[in-house]
Amino acid sequence: MGISANALHTGRFEHHLLTRKQKIGRTKKALLVGLMLTSLVDMFSMLVCFLLQTFSSSPEIFVAKDVKLADSVSGAEVKVAPVLSVAKTGLYLDKVGLGTVDQIFKTPAPFVKALTTLKSRWTKDNPGKPFPGEINLQADRDMASTDVARLMGILNSQQFEVIQLAVMGVQ
Amino acid sequence: MSLKAKRELNSDLNLTPFIDLLSTLVCFLLISAVWLQVASMDLKQSHGTDGGAPTEKAAVDVVLGKPGVATVILKMGTRTLNRSEIKAASTPELVLELQKKIIAYKNLPAMKNGNIESVLVAPHADVVHGDMVKVLDGFRLNGISNIGVKPSAGEK
Image 1: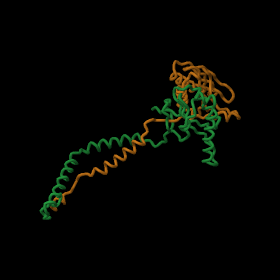
Image 2: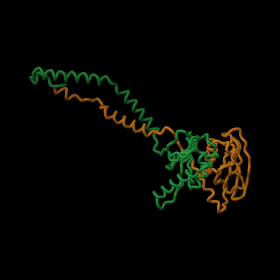
Image 3: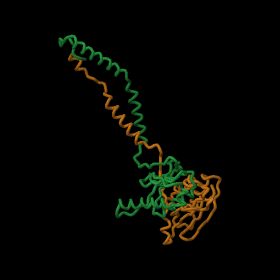
Image 4: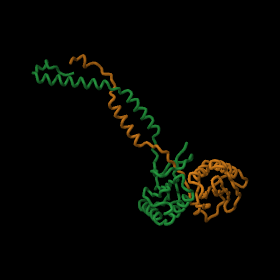
């Protein structure tokens, strides 16, 4: 609702402006009335309920694209630790490629060096604390278990003795 | 505009802030949503460091052979109490047989408190990682949390 042109005793131009404004206002109002908000709010509410139900505050680890994790029913919560991904295409330590598994077995020096660097960095960041030796190991489910076991052996030799094997949680 | 019209109570709920709030919540929850249920299985590989002092704790060594085949060795300190071969048609069946074997070991008279302290699994090259995880899973379901993997029982 606006002030009428007659009440203000305005001339022709002001009258035109006021009527135009009223017209625009009327058109906008008609548009707003046409939008049904009930269904939108319903949809949003249901989405929020579903997402709140599936919400998890536990830490998540990056899973490499080539790695298909093995299923497990007794999996526990993932802990924050360096991630070693092992796939047929290659081996990655914290997303840094170190070559294929065969290359690592032939010349384990780069892998050992990367592990040593990781350990020394941790020791530098946490002076006076004993090294926990924790590492998340993601291995592809179709890999030979002996290859995974050999990599575990290399990890043990570099004092990474608490290996958290990444698995796909199954109910 | 008349005063009467002004005094009329507007009972319409203002939906704008409600929709704003819902939109923000939906965005936040969608971004932080977890679609993959990644879990972890703790392996304790440090059995070797405790090897200096022989203890009278029961431990089981499992040597995985070709798929479906396993050798199970029950040890008490340095003594071998039992050794048996298991042959199954598939890995899930092998896991079931291993679980039965563990229960049988726990009920042996030689077992002092019926506890098996640790299990060490040595896989075969023909066994894929997924199958090894199933075997480890079976031991964890039997209440054994101290599980290790050693390289390697047999090459191809």
